[in-house]
Length: 95
Image 1 (cartoon, one colour):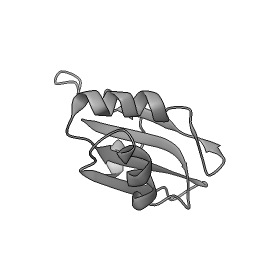
Image 2 (cartoon, rainbow, N blue to C red):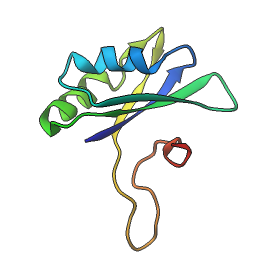
Image 3 (cartoon, rainbow, N blue to C red):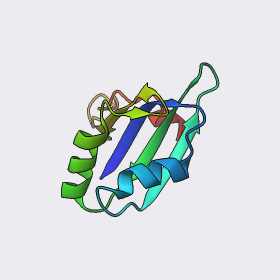
Image 4 (spheres, rainbow, N blue to C red):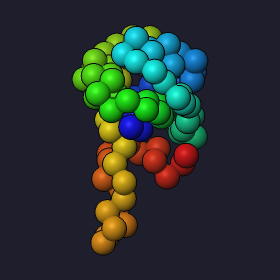
C-alpha cells in the first residue's frame, strides 16, 4: 500500500520517514518531495503488507514530527471515469 505523508517540515528526509514507518512494519520505499514554495514537504511511503500500512496511517496521522503535525493517507488510484486523483495529497502529480 502506498501512503502519502503531508505537512512535513522541510528538513525531514526519506530516511527519517523510513525510521518512523518501520516501527509499524516493513517499508519498501520512503521518499520526500520538496515543494517549490513554502516550508512544507510531502512524502511517499510504500509498505507491502496492507495491515501494517493501515496501522501506520492510523499511528502517524496527526503525529508531531520535528514539531509539526503531519498527515498520513492512503494513496488511491485515479478515478477511471474522471481521471481525478482520489487522495488529497497535493504532491501526487509531482512524484
